[in-house]
Amino acid sequence: MGSTYFHFATMARMLPPPIFRAVRSVGLGALSYYRFLSHVFHLAMPGIREATKGATDLFSIIDRRALRSIYWSFIGNPEELLQIRRVRQILARERLKVLTKTSAVRTASDVAGVIHNGLEHNVAGAKSAPDLDRPSLMVGVVTGIERVWKNIDALDVLSIGPRSEIEIFSLMAAGFRRERIRALDLLSYSPYVEIGNMHAMPYGNDCFDAVFLGWVLGYSREPAVAAREVVRVCRDRAIVVASADYVGEKARSSASNFNNEENSIKSTEQILGYFGKAVGSVYFRHDPEPPDINMVMTVFEIRKSK
Image 1 (cartoon, rainbow, N blue to C red):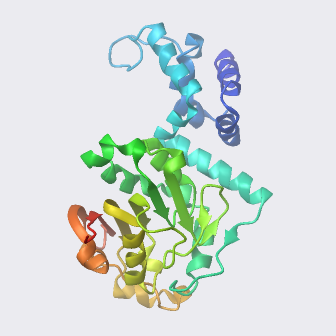
Image 2 (spheres, rainbow, N blue to C red; image 1 turned 90 degrees about the vertical axis):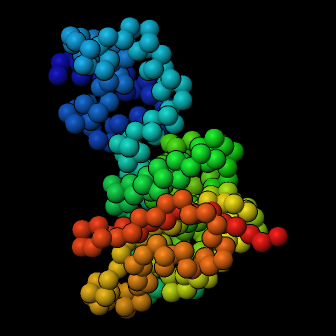
Image 3 (cartoon, rainbow, N blue to C red; image 1 turned 30 degrees about the vertical axis):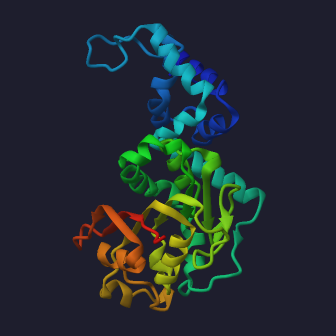
């Protein structure tokens, strides 16, 4: 790529260290990554790409001052880069690799209510979690609620069972403030994720405005207990999003690694039933259509009796 590569490498080294390490982890010469970030880097250095003609190129008719202001916005606030899915994935993978090299994955001693082999399965699954980026599905629905969107930087959020930091990055990308995000899991390699059991959470009553339960209820033998804990830590009118994969009888019968204890989640009605009378308005329901559509997801508010 000649001089283009030289400019690309030079600009990459100007990035804040965490972002630069993510760039370096995939190789500065990687064509796929060059295409991914080339628009960001050419904003300040026009020599990175030849000018194209016509208004169909998103950036070709914007003057240099406007392009530079976009570029320096990223440099001044690198967390804005988390709004790009590929950045979230690379950063989560890179941090997982570095943090698990420097310290062991911590695991909970209390696994009461968790299905057989549930902890071990999720320790193994943490490595692939950044590539899936499933939490962005939940975050997108929740932030579509107007009272969440309007007050997003003032809300206290709890992520239960995130596995990897990709869920925290998705929350930050949506506008939730990092210092107001808590995360709880049976395993953790991250300073952002605390060790604990969702069936007995280490938080006081009425702490959170939003709770994310992403693909965790299937690992519970006592989902109603977990639901009561969620209600306890939620404030009145808090938003809860719960998601799962549809598990039919055929899938359960082959799940020998879970000793056939996996909780069979089949519908949003089933999830809402765990929360009983605490369910207020239901904002979103996505029921499975097996065999091709297997996600179960619902978003609702918690109503607490006075």
